[in-house]
Length: 315
Image (cartoon, rainbow, N blue to C red; front, side):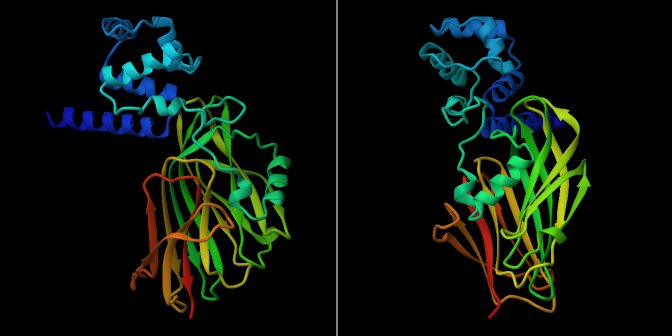
């Protein structure tokens, strides 16, 4: 009995994640599996509600071969939400026109131009690495640990990253490191910690930006998740006063930890958000520095496009 309950909880957790992060076909396929309904039974129950859709269409929708677009198809999706006992709009919202021009299914986006002040340099680096506008991945969960050294400098950072592919054939991730003022990106070291290896690395000295290609050990299919870890060793810049993470796409969980050297502790720490790189801080909240661990953190259960970060005052 306990085992069945645990299995059921795991299935519902997987369904909730799929509905939150998408894409549509993965969420639909997960919902059908969770409810244990074959497509012909779904078609029959929809027909009883006055909604007529073919088994072939349902199959194409859950495979990602086609997307419901016409009015009658969208009506069928709304009926599916009710039939599968899903929250209202949980499937239809994944069909909203937030995708890039390539047609790939992707959450709502904000351009790098609004996230990074040195956007022209960053775009040049991404173009040099052949990065498409649709990288094929979105974040499910990202845990990031930042280390501030005895000289108040950004010593390094490590990431434990869980991503989901929203198209077939994805086999890499481009990690971006934006250093503090005075950073020499040519001296920044890139580490592949888990389930990836370092490929090409490009940087722009004036902008203090570095982009590293992290190659996966497998080629992902749409809907696949992947766990990998990587890090950057910096220590090349002057005193650091904040660490921020820019998000181009909504969805997923983000956890940021900032740890300070015992010999140099800040006077105050503050969590904040920005809608773009030049926007004023919002969502400000004082953070308490834990004495023994010399660390502060923030948790974003579901990130939104924009910037989130932690700032500190040395005075």
